[in-house]
Length: 273
Image (cartoon, rainbow, N blue to C red):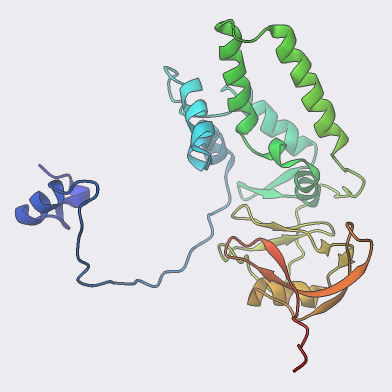
């Protein structure tokens, strides 16, 4: 018996039987293609209750299947937990401390990132902004329980890892004042169309994971150049970039690829006939 989700599409028993008989490697013929034009919508800002609920199941946002499975396995047998980070006893206290220190503000029950919060996230190494370490440390704890790793070896590796990550953190430009970010560009998020929050060091989407640094290879982009890039997906040729590898200045256009990642576009020099 079909579920309500598929009862409309596969209500014809013959169609359902035909699909059920398909096996991997079977050839088929495409009779037609239908393309629906849709527009993504930015996710709404979190309330505290919504964020606390999502912290119990962050695995659903993890792309790496191994990390996702480790998070889910870590919560096996725990009531109302399915691949989360933190514990019911600590999550609320952590959020309160972050608000107290000015990393976010609350307006009409919505959690609004501040300039300080956005700049701090931008300064952190990528591994510190994802739930991956929770999963990987759980895996190492399992190895200790199984006798495959000693506690001393785990602590030595952890100390080296933390020292390396702290060494790579640059907090020199984190100057946010803890107030909600109000400045905005005449542009929307290129990934989801959401509202952008602007700080001197980073531009971040309030609704998704998109973030953009206005300083590119030693050149600080102007508001007009940033708006052109975010709105049109590209800029004209810009001068003043500096290569760390060669030590030389260069010019290039900028574009956002299909993942909204920044790329250089170099103009081709005309060839002589």
